[in-house]
Image 1 (cartoon, rainbow, N blue to C red):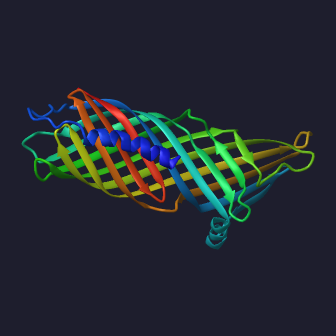
Image 2: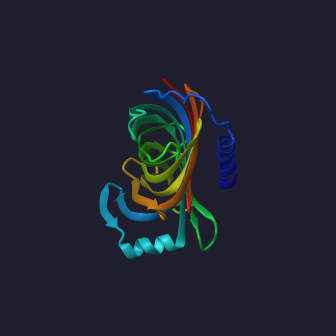
Image 3: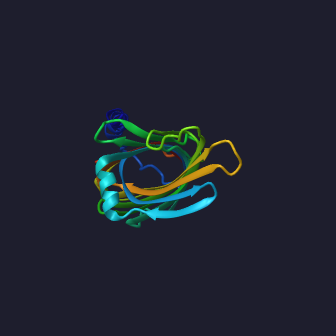
Length: 290
């Protein structure tokens, strides 16, 4: 999957790099833009916190919070992975963007839908013991910024921070870690909140309608889960409730970023960007400038 997405990213990058350079008047800048984009994130996760809460037949047995050593043991024995797909609409404002000013600043808001596919694999046996899939229907909202400085007519630098959050719940859970007790039926509900943030410091090269940029990036993906299981024996009050609250974060925090944008016409811009390290993030889309 990672190789396929990298290929899909490189194809528009190639065409951007080989696009014919304009020799006449530069593409006229527009104040606002609206667009759509697709983002894919594949990340290895580690447990940062875990709390267990049990209620048996109406009796609250209290909470247990795992220690740092216990979390380390679970991280050593189990591999946690998250895949995120997001379809986003974007509206942006080029707040500072004048030919006689070397600085430029753009801010945009993103909104759309996202999914969350989370899995847990037992490293000792190589078997998948837990799977949660929210489906591509959960709300997603974010902010993106671009602060740039033009060094020459071709070269510049760009600082690009952005943050995107999503949340949702689902009963689509495959759980081999906590099987149903004998003679009990169960219902399961999984709620989650995700937050993805990144900051990239990029060198920028402009040639005609094409801008190519690359540089280091810092990123983090946080994911909080509230997984509740209800076990019923059939009689009123004969119920067991088990709740697990976990917090997870990406194992790696650094990646290399590369991207490109292509002003096909003044009103239309294609763009693509990828952060590649231990994890993979790919974004591509189109902006309509006005």
